[in-house]
Amino acid sequence: MLRVRGTTYHFRRIVPPALRTALNRREIWVSLKTGYQNEARKRASLLHARTTELFMQAHSTLAEPDALSRLEGLLVSLRDLQSVNLPSSAQETGSVPVSAPMPKPQTVKKPAKTPKAAPLMLSGALKRFVLDNPHASADTKKATQRAVDLFLQAFGDAPVSIIGGEKAGVFRDLLFSLPASLGKRKSSLTLEEEAQRAKEGGLPTLSGKSVKNHMMRLSALWNQLHQRELVARNPWTGWNFENGQKTVRRSWTVKELALLASASWHSKSVPEQTFRLVTLIAAYSGMRLGETCTLRKEDLQTVDGIPCFLVRPHSDDGWTPKTDASTRVVPVHPKLIEARVLALKDTTDGPYLIPGLETSKQGVRGATLGRAFSLLKTRIGLPAEITFHSFRHTVSTQLRNADANIREVWIDRLLGHEATHKSQGTTTYLTGISTANLRQTIEAISYPETAFKKGTF
Image (cartoon, rainbow, N blue to C red; front, side, top):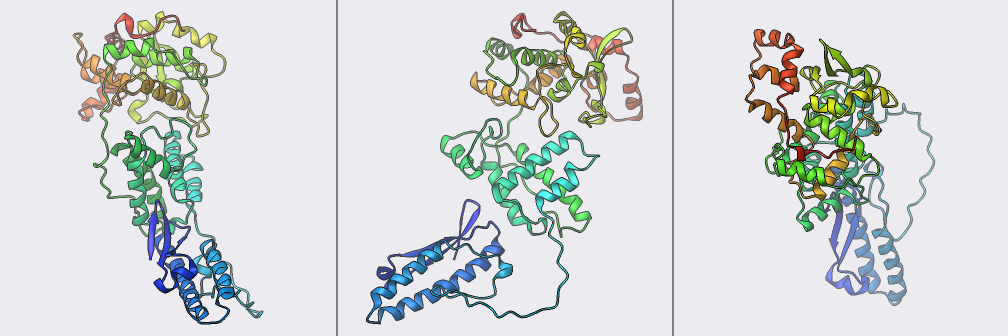
């Protein structure tokens, strides 16, 4: 009978009572070394035949005069059985007696057959349709790679044609049990061990939104496979994600900003000066972490006499803003000019405006800073609702509550949001918003003097 431990199937069979003393066992338990149910059933069938023959031999041996010496041989066979490296189902043609080696088959010449094409593995599908796709953005490649890596950690590589709804459901349930801090620190634990650690420690687990994002990345990959008739259906659609923990990100409070400003920096991978600089730019512009970290020197320009950041695609490395609306002009806030951000164009080495950051293997600049920030905010006791993205929430909230005469479409344009009302008139107007109006909007952002650490850049 089949049993599941974690993500792996096992074969379990009770030893008949009359044989338990002789075999010194109450049951036989063997790992089937697979997480696929159909494969597990075939392997279990083979083991059932082997154990049946073992029991029959044990019964007959007990009736013989030299039972003791014969039983020693059966015990050796039993130990071999429990450590057996099962063949794949394609090689299983029948049961094999455990007490004797399989006879060598007679050599029969068969006509040569055309070799079958190797099945498309999940890792191969990722490379072929995502990582090697020149039209896929860096964010898409990074997120899809992360989702596939988690699947491979849990179940190993497998042909895409046999990954169905059962496996998708097991993966979904596993994701919901993983700690929210997964990937933000180095760990040698398996995913099953990470889930157990989260359960025993009462740790926050992945939110429904995070689980949904992983599943959607796999679903997008499977849509391509389905269109090419490489799979029969897409098992990653139609799932519910409401039973996970939901964390709603919010704006910073004055007290929380002061706590962040007074915290000691801990990361050896990112200089404190770089962290404080990126934080300041995000707080006084509303730009996303990725947008800030990928600014080039040529992205700092004077437009209509006003110093501005240009958030735009980079053709040389394939980086693009999150949406079409995210391509925009952001005037430099007076506080950033006061902090000598404009001088970075002449003082920073290399093509990027922000110094001290490395680009990850997935082509993402600022990923290390994001992880370091998450560790810092956890260490100083900031709540889960506060993330680096909360600077963007704070800017949006301040601007919408400002006393100045600031129009909603100006705010949307500054932050790179789609217009609330997508009429033709609104769309046309958005493209014609003057830089002066955007500067008026950006200057409405303000913080107390205690919000940011002084003298670090």
